[in-house]
Length: 119
Image (cartoon, rainbow, N blue to C red; front, side):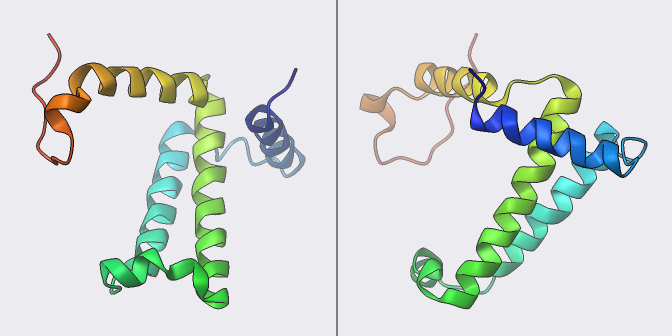
């Protein structure tokens, strides 16, 4: 069974191939494009208060821009992961498993302090 993320990766691969863009889709270029898109996402929130940022999706124009920037970030992230052979879902679960080991809920509940590295 193919997941939605795999379907998106397939579609992005086909999109790039149809335009002969694979030559430009190097890990470096995709990572740089991803960083640029994350910057554009940040720009949408930059001068908002924390309260305003929590309500950003209530404004239809701002919501449209947020969806667009989130889509751009997703596209470049999925394309980069596909090119590198990284299963994003598996990697995210592994990272969360590590976070659960490093930040036990009893010790870190309500705290933003950094945990020491795992041995």
